[in-house]
Length: 287
Image (tube, rainbow, N blue to C red; front, side, top):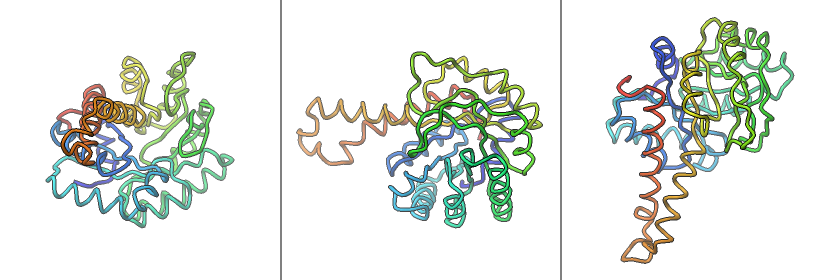
């Protein structure tokens, strides 16, 4: 059931659990996530970076694939198709293509420009009933070639951006994309609590959810985080499972080279990660 992310996140925020944002990369990813969330009766947000959208044949093709699989699997749980770290132009294109949720990431702009552009994207999205996410304080690591050092967000900027009418808000609190280094300092919960206060209880977003210790994730949820982004862990699990299949020579047995067989262990590995994350975030049976 395709929908905006607004209602699922308001419910999660009110009831104290998190909704998983799982980045999708191809047909296998979409199938794995949809089948798993339907089994667990959990809402989900399918995150699509601009690079992944290009890889999958464009925004319209992403919407078409998700829509048709949603129908063919008879999915009953809420599913949002969300542009992840969208540029100003990318946000408008994804909205036009039928995405049900948009993140405009203006964190690289001077704050006032980020604010003005966010207001414009909000107006365009609201006209179509599409939810909006914005960001202040770049998230660390690399996402589609954009590298952030893991800045800590300015609470006053958070307050101003939250007042634009966005539905969810991503603030840098020391989190990073990709693998976390051994010397990582952890999340700044004082800043997180302050951000929640100045944004008047807006559902908050935790980017770089792969690799954050479980206790930290649970504490973040208790402080207002309602959407947690997961990508790297699914990719690593998928790669490891496919590698194991090939290293064991299974691709050389019978028709083991058939991509449906070759990639099947990877699909199961994605499902396992999704199941673990959804259970950790507390969204099982919350659809």
